Amino acid sequence: MDTRNDQDARDKVFDLLKGIRIAMLASRGEDGAMHARPMATSEAKSFDGELWFFTDIHSPKIDEIRRDPDVLLTYADDDRQHYVSVAGKAEIVRDVAKQKELWSEGNRTWFPKGAEDPDIALLRVTVDMAEYWDAPSSTMVYAFGYLKAVTTGERPNPGENATVRF
Image (tube, rainbow, N blue to C red; front, side):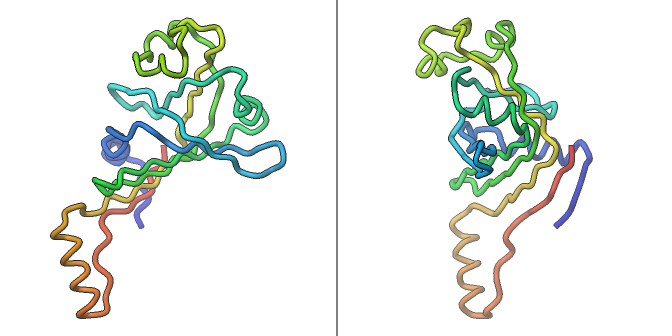
């Protein structure tokens, strides 16, 4: 597995994340155990090493992140065979202007009062490292991989896997 820190590798991470709206956000609870929950990633036009999420300021994850800002995000797009894990530091941000900038109407499902709701907080995750798996996704590639495994006993090429440091 490669470890990279170049702009092309960072762009690859962003390209893989496009279209995967929901991430599982894991943080450490008061009891020391990891807790994960689905979170909708705010869509970005470009990727500068930060991912943004809307959350309720009264959510238990707020206290978890204040105690320990280290988080892990996992993204999966099974149809395209794109998988990304992101390790970073989360920060609670109270900024109505940023909330308006990131707002999409789909957020109203969870925040019916809109972008200026005083109970909204943003989570900014500053990415330290990402690891991705970009596997071939066509049926023919899978069929070939299966055939290769059955006839030769060898595993097929799983695709590209790299660690990217930010």
